Amino acid sequence: MWFENKVTSNKEAFLQKVRLICAKLGIEPDWLMFVMNSESGLNPAAYNPNGGASGLIQFMPDTAKGLGTTTEALRKMSNVAQLDYVYKYFYPYRGKMSSLYDLYLVTFFPAALGKPDSYVLQTSTLPAKVIADANPGIDLNHDDRITVGEFKRWIDLKKKVWG
Image 1 (tube, helix red, strand yellow):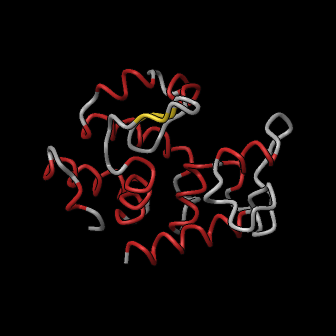
Image 2: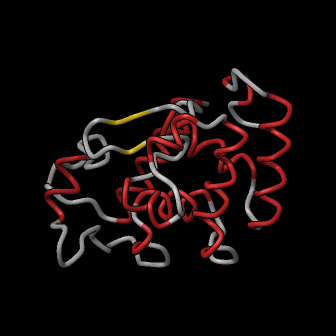
């Protein structure tokens, strides 16, 4: 499995649970490992002070609340325990994620799932520039907006680097 060498605690239990939840979600374990490595380096205690994202897939505070927990509680969980919330987060999208791109879009900006490559990541209350400014590495052409196509190219670049 991709990045399994980066799992530093509970390795066998963690990898077994990744396989189990991925089977239930109908996705490839490598995809989930890619997303978790990219978002947190597979560190369940990872924390981003810019917005408060926490954990394996960088749950936002409101997302954690919607899942019945907090980002603080998530950071205190073991990697294995936190996978229950990873599963709970992705569960509503099961059957709709048919690629690494889809899984990562659901993680990063769920409203973009199924949208064309030209779709700009934004909402009525969250302008494209705010999203691009918060994620300058994804705004590959530096035009203050991120499209689905640009997001996919960013993933492809990460895949190349990570080999």
